[in-house]
Image (cartoon, rainbow, N blue to C red; front, side):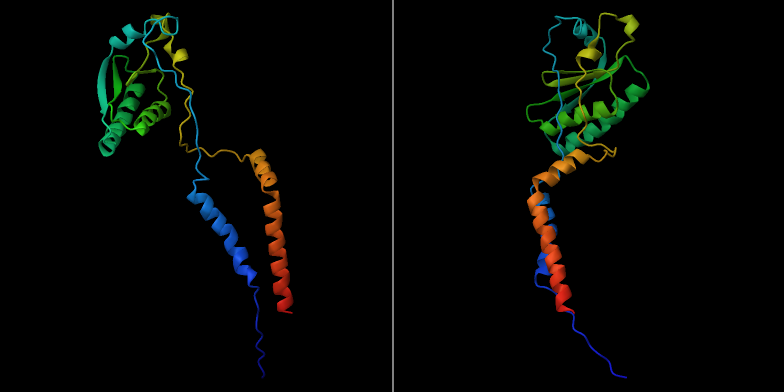
Length: 207
């Protein structure tokens, strides 16, 4: 029985076609093109009590007992302190403790990430009241509104902060995809044509 061996030829451009999208993705990853950034609005109290939104804050803050968390700029130490502080914030919120609070103090060598991390903790744990003031962020649970009708700090200090990291899956933004396709329309067409002609060339070589 005679066996026929048939050689299969591949176009030299096939390797380039395969590697091109991989190299593009690696390049985009190297320049952090896939990194998501977000912004936030923060209202920092200036120490004045000139309107109804800030009236009584000093007296309110001074009536609490605070555990001080000193953030010194030592990354490993600050991380441990913030991990513990997160548990304590959660404990205070769950117990509705209106007597105690936590004061986050940022020293001169504190890293910026610790400030963001404190805001992140307070947002994730759904803290109802916290006051950024100078080098501190004061956190405590507010008293019931009926006991202090003039104090409305929650409206004033709603920072509108969106955490940088979220476990929720965001819906596909088709408008953004359309814009991307429009922006890179010509390169996409060129790549598809390269694929078509390469496959066509391989087909002719193997006929």
